[in-house]
Image (tube, rainbow, N blue to C red; front, side, top):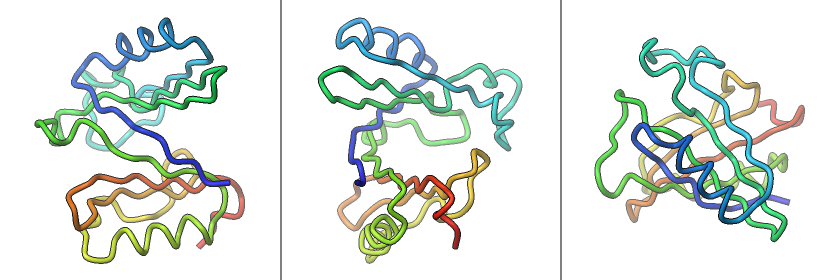
Length: 140
């Protein structure tokens, strides 16, 4: 099953925000830093910032969040993205292709440093989307 959930972008306080949301909703919170994945273009001053945080709650909510590095736009209107994720390759690639039609691909759907296939785009209505295809079936 593919999952759709909000992904909130913060400027330098994702850890604090995600910990707050965990205190509100309960559940399991995981966080990874840019430094853990040695992300290109990220300086030592941002290595401890959150590259990906995920809160999964007992009520079935999934909330994701991350710090926006200085190399990316962090202006109003870019503070939330919709995330599609799962291991259903054909289903998720189909969503990707249809969302990209008339839109702008900002990160091509390709192998990511964490091993999944990942891409980002802005659809024809200006909405930002992330697609993450996990598992061994994500090969091209």
